[in-house]
Image (cartoon, rainbow, N blue to C red; front, side, top):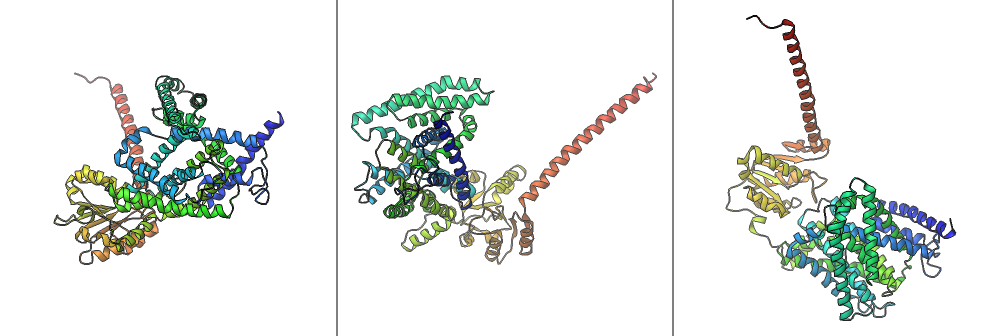
Length: 590
């Protein structure tokens, strides 16, 4: 084995080892693992720290060729996987309002960033620093947002769905920008049109081959998982080669390869097969990116802090009014804007390509990376407390005369018969409860009022005869005019782990205050058996402990299975005895 091969293996080994160490540090501080990978690259870069040539690193990895090779392979695989995760059918289902929101957020965001930082980049080291910087600030981090919203059980809420929709459309705009990147140096209409036509032809070719050839190859290889993996990677690199021959970027070919597979039924299987190699190459790409980053100076840090403030402010300023005008509410728009207040990993990909094509200087990479790190830290807490921040903004706007507009049925129910069964929150247990009532006691449906802040299920519930009303459990004053004070049964099926801004104990005290003239039976939920006793002592009629109920239900099912099998066995033995006895006695005399 020659020296170069040994050096490459050593560099890869060190990259993985340091990435592991720094990713654990990032996890401890509740930061995205991507930041750990980039910091690992900074630590093992080829130069010796900020006092030598203004760079960071302790100099373990020296081979620039090794770094470039790792970076290029990682980038291609990363973009292939991004393509695999783009669901074209889901894009089509989003509707016009979501398309308008995603379009306005990106293009108005780019325009805002351009004007806000025009004076800062008037003397940039690259030809397109301002354009790349504006685009980088207009893209949000899918990794951070999806992880935090999933942890908070907010993916399916209105703000959560708006956030995910914008993220998907951001990826589309980023891909389109990558398609015209090669022509930025000579942006004549003919050149751009030619590139778009070549890109369109490559997309058509990819989908035709995927539909009529790859589908059969994957079907034939279904019994051999390793063939699925090899075939998908071969398809990726084939389109990369074709794209390069057509004077498009290899990375564009990788994206198209991924999207063409994702559009068909075997796409999900390919993603699952690629999960291991995906994580490996994503790690190498971001470590390699960190190795090439220059240390930011004071001016760069100043720009980075300004960029973080701009990202948070501009997201809310652009997203909230757009959502409000579409009729989905000001609060939902504010929370969606706050959820998007970070800088995307895709921005680093676009900047890496810009450096390769000499569109921008490496100094811009350092600024954006610093901005991304700061924004990721701040955004983690912004998303965790998005509801409280949104309330603060709404309170400030109410002073200015701008209030959240709601339909009468969403805030109060008047002139209607009172509902005596009230469900506070509509989540998993409540959904199961409604399903049971619908089957066993359908007449109860017209007695039920569901109070929730998420209108996604409103139409379904009202079609069953159930009344839905807007209400925020964290603010009991919003519950006063919903008829709760005359309810006979008040049920909260959401545990403290999922409730935001309140607990079952605080909710119980608030409900007792609201229903001071007539105390209904309160049914609450907790994951802690000790807390269940506290709630009962404080006035709860019944407390649901989901884990305990699941265990009891499992015991019932298991008992029926075991005793059912035993009864069947006893019955079978009895039949055999009767048969044997009748044979011994012989035929009865006539």
